[in-house]
Image 1 (cartoon, rainbow, N blue to C red):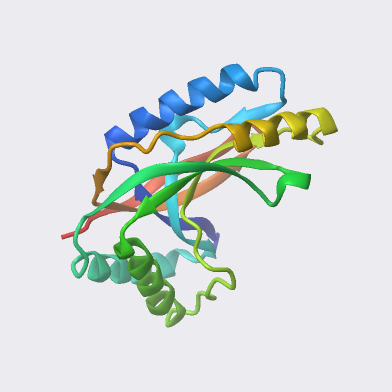
Image 2: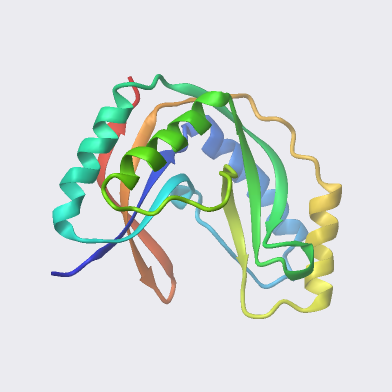
Length: 192
């Protein structure tokens, strides 16, 4: 039985996507000489729970959990806030933008962790850090590249975006290709 790589994510509302497009265009100009692979705006999502390799017979159980949780949570406001890098400034590999939300997002993530653990999915050992990946460093970054990224992160303030109502949860299948990941929605849900 072939497994699929899957994760649960919050779909970005259109006003947030437009804001992200503006942010990325500005950053691309400033980092044009740094070897970065930019995430296409249409691929940006807020991962709520990475499931990893899932057997096809588990997908139905997962969708039932998602559907049940979505019927207990209301849509909530989110906005874009700050720039950052992972894992740290000395070894920046990922450029990200933070997502600010009310307490509802963390409660929803905690509920997914608890309910999916009953299906055998391991809980996260790290605390949840809501962010969207903007770009990944290609290959090994030169010290000058890391310095440029860090200077930009330190000196750039992201204007707080107008908040937007987030209400769509998606169960995605992720396929790794040489050109990057391809995401296909397996199921979509609406917070009610």
